[in-house]
Length: 161
Image (tube, rainbow, N blue to C red; front, side):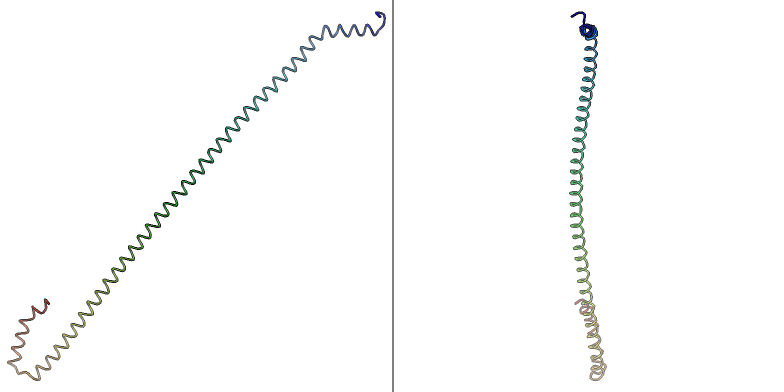
């Protein structure tokens, strides 16, 4: 058994692994430990990046919600301002219409008063003309003078009426 070459190869192999096996196992174990640590660091970094991404996503969603709320508030404010402006414009239009109506009524009243005064003046002129004609044809000078004096005396009272 000690004389065969296979025995010595096996013995050399066992001795070689006995002497270097521990170092080889330590080296392989160390390499695996380093690889495991590197993988753990990458997993930790990936987890941290995932948390950061989730936080950023939550922040952007919150900002989006805030922006939507602000947009809705601006829209509501614009609507209320538009309604207020519309109500104000309606009130101004109504005031203008009332003012124009009042002006029209006043113009009509002035036109009526002017027409009445013109009719009155025309009636007075006609009456005066008719009176002159009648007086010149039918009344003598003394009676006419008395009537003129009486008319002049009554003139202030009639003008006030």
